[in-house]
Image (cartoon, rainbow, N blue to C red; front, side, top):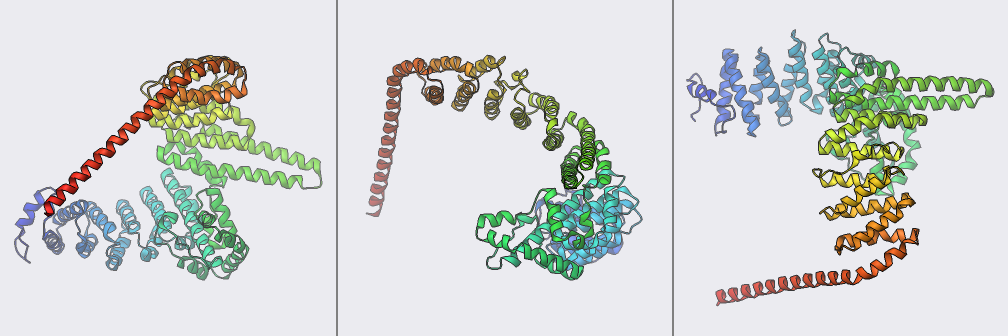
Length: 623
């Protein structure tokens, strides 16, 4: 393809523009695109600039290196008025900002100017592109527009601001902890748009996670200087974090934080030194904490009040948690799962507050007044927990399994904190999980079955009348049937025990050896749980021994061993049959061993003949 000269004809580019944007990349195309972008910029022709950018983004999708066009794209983004052209330029800048960090500052000026545009769409797109640069050196230019956009009247801009804060928390958490105020956080968490509030919640959780990781790493380097520990990108989620963040925090936050951090380092020196003696304990102790409740406790130990006031804003506050809970149906399924995970922090905090209040009341001198006040506070906390579960009850009817499981986790957490609720919680969770077990895909059925097994362990009589839901089907995969066979003995009671035994005996004739073995093990478990089934299980084992099928006989013997020890009368029926079966079983084993030896010798002779032929051929070639 011929190159375009300045002031020359651009017919060749017009012909190329009519082709697909994802055509094969040819040599010299970058120079032609550069000339096209320069010509369109001089002529202020946005149509031609849009065509050139479309081809540039197409080649970028093909994997071609179009990074030399960075300066021309920055100029096009600065002159662009069309939102489509701006979006194409933003895609390019976000892709190649790390490859050209020296020129990325020019893009920051253009994007920061567009963040004050009159159009909300342009403001939101520019803010998203500015956050998509992901350069630590440019994070200081992202924080002010993102924090000011959090108070923008347009919902789209506020949503983009919350997403930008989440990205900034991964790129430069120390900067965001210093600049973000609690008022901005509370405004975002109480936003009219529920998605904006959820994005702000995720951004705050990411910031807490990164700060805890930074402080843990700094403590490890300060208290155990005799060893080296490399903090990988897998630990903190981003490879641009460095120990320099701690120095910035100490310098900027003043002597209060320095004193708090020094006192915390002194108290944790012994723990870190003991952890250094064991590499396994060291790697485990320095791993960032994923649990939200523990993260906030660790930040409190480091002095969260002087570290960053915004970090003290959590979902533990009832004024923030309850409005988000009331707007839960307005979110999509993915956002509902995230919010339900964060609501666990609120439930745990309420329970911890109740325990602290109870212990403080019992430590007082007046026992009668203490008991009355603790009883009233306990009743209030229980009533609030029940109202929370009633508000979440509609989420158990969701067709999305992720939403159902996230809600079930909160119900089980509430039952753990309040044990009298356990029977009611298990009875409420069973029907929706059974619906997903029968009507969902095999993968969903397996996950639902695992949760149903947990409920069966908590409440053994819960599925006594619904045990048929756990029978194996011919079209189910092996892993699902294995899980069901392992669960069936837990559901057995006196009325349904014989039916479950018949189902297990039928599954023992399955062609797959793993299913045969699992069915026989479940039969043995059933006989140990219910002594009345020892004799029927023994009859089934005798029938398996008479089949002269080696895998079945091996599994039957394995199951019969503990039964004979537990129920000695069974030995009178099993030992004669075993004596009659043992010669045939030994003959089968010897035959299999002889066949295996024959195959091994045949393979050895074949390999020896092949090597001799190779040696003879190589000797003849050398002669």
